[in-house]
Image (tube, protein in one colour):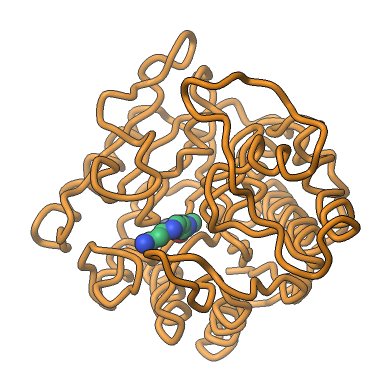
Amino acid sequence: MLTVYSDAHQAHHAKQELIGGQFQPAFDTPQRAVNIIERVAEVGLGRIVTPEAHGTAPALRVHSSRFIEFLRTAWSEWHAKKGDSDAIPLIWPSRTLRDIEPRDIEGRLGYFCADAGTPITAGTWKMVQAGIDVACTAADALQRGDRAVFAATRPPGHHAGKELFLGYCYVNFAAVAAQRLIDQGNRRVAVLDVDYHHGNGTQEIFYDRSDVLFVSIHADTRDVFPFFLGHADETGTADGEGFNLNLPQALGTGWNSGYAQALQQALERIEAFRPDCLVVSLGVDTYELDPIGQLALRCEDYAEIGKSIRSLALPTCFVMEGGYMVDHVGINAVEVLRGYESA
Ligand code: Q9C
Ligand code: ZN
């Protein structure tokens, strides 16, 4: 399996993260992606290539132009006003306030960002552009005939919506890849999201469409981030009615206590959709030792996930999402890919 990777992600390294009222080291570290690519090399998964430059056009297919422009320019605006500290919003257009884009950078940060855990730093845009390039280069390899390809992106992307960033995600790379596959002539694309967290951004982007099916297995959002989407009754709207499937899991769920069954249900829905290809949002924060996650998958379960996905016999683009147990993120992510290759 081909892997696409750029070390440009290292340009972004958040200083700290506010968690449980305390500043702690950020969870999305450059080391996560380094460990993943080192593991890919160690097991000899296949060739590793650097991405081709694609600019912002592919991101503009799934995000608004004012949003991408904001991401591109926010740091210089913030830096001019506030100096070197990470740009983090502290006020949001919550439910009873108005939907107005402010003029000042502080207001605009809250307008486009939904949480306080997704800072913009000097290197954020460089990292995000590299992620767009990686996702597109991977999608193009699939289109040229590769059976499977791994987009080793950092940061994750599945929380990012048309005009919203949160949850360490800025641009939705899985959505960029899925849309690119549609734009290149595929009639139906399925997105399977196995990250611990619900892929609220991917759901939002494709919610009213019947050409992209979104299926997600995640920790129940009544209990965990991102809270405000991801519930079982969200099935799609307008043309997209019936093309969104959320399979929330109770905290503590493991392979034999519900996860394998949910995966089977997800695969059956994808099969019935008869897609031309598949994008997998590959998060491994479902791991039993993940410091953020509260599901309970073990190392050996990840190969089973890969094997099960392979049974669909679809051209498959894996796009890296979460996984924060840093010394296991490479092992577990690559287990999925090896399981896929072995089946
Ligand atoms: N107390 C992804 O895995 N903050 N994003 C959680 C936990 C947000 C993670 C705080 C975590 C988002 C793609
Ligand atoms: Zn996650």
